[in-house]
Image (cartoon, rainbow, N blue to C red; front, side, top):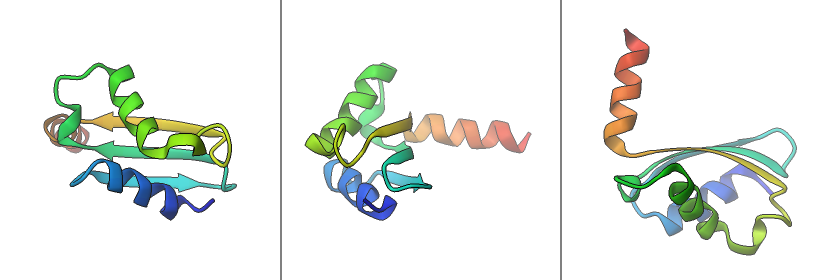
Length: 84
């Protein structure tokens, strides 16, 4: 499976999300997801939302998925902190 396909599935499930997915081997992925839906949710709840967009692919075509999930406000703050 291609990283772009995983990106498209997450975007389809979380409209208006910023999504970046990378993979070196087509079965292990890292994803950055910035979505308003994450506002006020715990980390596990955010991950569950992302996994929900991928359905049965997780554990089959997607063997591993590392997720960084942030609300838009958190993402802006993280970017500002990195700039110093």
